[in-house]
Image 1 (cartoon, rainbow, N blue to C red):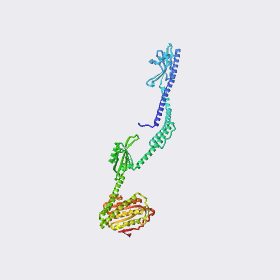
Image 2 (image 1 turned 90 degrees about the vertical axis):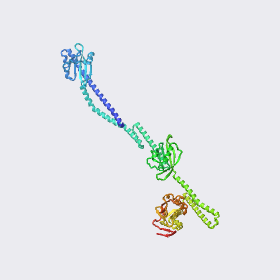
Image 3 (image 1 turned 60 degrees about the horizontal axis):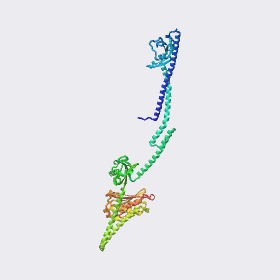
Image 4 (image 1 turned 30 degrees about the vertical axis):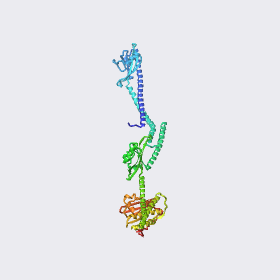
Length: 612
């Protein structure tokens, strides 16, 4: 059922009251008009009947005028009134409109008047209404001493018509009055309901969440108090909502800033809450997650099994679950479950905390591998030194030729052992991130010094060295560390190029940075090794690496040297074509010279020649 506005409900009530009042007033007014008209007509009929009785009395006393014509002249004066004279027996002796009728029987009030001797009147109802009669009877003394009756009668139709005319004439002013009353009722209803409508709209506005705009206070006491109560309620709600929103935002910010993933599910395994870290760790790409089943948003069977066990009450299990994130790299997670309870302490679900332990696992693997590699690298020379020393002690020292050869092997293994320890100490110093001493150095000079250290090795293997470096480039760096890094790169390039190959050192300035390329055209490196090439003791070809020498720490030192100077290292290699190792170091813009000025040097077979 459609609800109506309060205005029209109040106004319709007023209209109903006004209509009832108007109808009842018109009915009562018509009734009073009719009663008044009948009363006047009764009085008139009574006067006519009394006059007729006087004439009958005079006629009886004079005995000169016949009774049948005693009302003759009265008919002309009042033709609507019918006068009849009844004798004591009830016969009609005279009528005002002509010859007396012999068939008319006396009416009941005639008999009453004859018996009581008092006047009487009566309204005779009839159907149709047009034949209704008003009758008045008065007693009259006849000649024999008995009582006769003079009856005056007339139809009420003319009276009713006159009353109807007056009643119809009243409809116009009554209708105008009713219209004025209806207008006043509408204005009053509007004035009465408008404050209520304002309060209703204000309450709806509060319900929609607009609590800042307050409700205007009406003039009435009750409505004014109601408006004040609504405004106080809105203020309190606004404060509470702001507080709840602030707490929610804080909680959401905390959840989103957590490195750990958080997943909350209800007892039907539907997601209640999840933070961004959990979506990233679980590889969830669904936009709308809350409200959906865990099985719909995450296909990790191990996680689903863990949640099922937790919902069954098993919270003692702490597992490490393997999953995959969107990048496709394998990620190891530690999942811990806790019960989720409501304000009354009832269990309503489970909270799962996901911790990414992939890096910890990798570091642990690296630590194990590092310890194993260090042990192996140290054990090999120590074993050789111990073995040849025991051989000398067993009598080989007596043979000068063999003794010298063994001592030379022991010396080489000792140098190798010293190199490993020295490289480890260098890495240890770099790992501690101690502040290094820097100075302004010429990049070209550092490259020349590094190349000079490798000149003899390049000459022995017939490797051609070339340098391309713009003149005037200067760094604020530690020259010893940078020279060590460049020497390692050039040394590796010479070792793995092979006889008759070329190794080039090219410098590319780029704004406030400079990139130093050490390129060779040797055998190259497979792509699977490129990501780990800078790890400590990592060797692409372990057999060949030990054959050509080296500790397996050179590239790690290069990476750490670049990092302590705020730079980076990278490698690009194609099997069969060669490798390009590059180290990027920052330049001080105030120390950069003219990049267009070049003074290139070419070093070939260990000799330096002018070029280009």
